[in-house]
Image 1: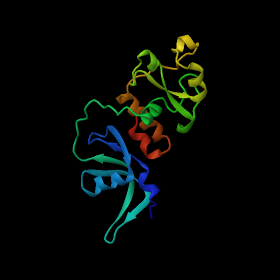
Image 2 (image 1 turned 135 degrees about the vertical axis):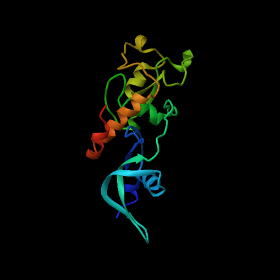
Image 3 (image 1 turned 60 degrees about the vertical axis):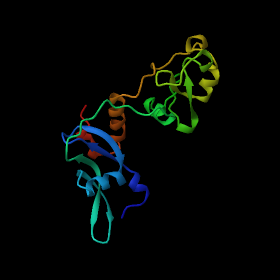
Length: 175
């Protein structure tokens, strides 16, 4: 039997060509399999039951029809910035929980810095206070890497990170 929490477990989504294209929750994966849109390639030991049927919960699903994937973009959000920066302060390199990180404007808003992918980075409270309303150069601080938009490369890297905890994903994440 599957707990409510188990329905949020990440599932790797493959295109019909076996190319990894996304990660979704187990609940969504079950709906796609049930509707005949996808097939389970790998399954967990958990299952869900209805009055007539029992389904094993997939850990990898494959779409049955090939989907052309347009250039992938992600919404600009605090969560997506933190994921892009791997929950790492971009100045002191400490890896911290989301609640202990802030977003820093590399070029401060007070100097017409925008709130976009290329100007926001994950930052711990201490570094953010130290930097203040200055640029990193003025504050004598160095960025780990220049901020970039969330890209297909970032998305694939996150799939690999998530896949490290699921051995069944490894053979599909070959790049």
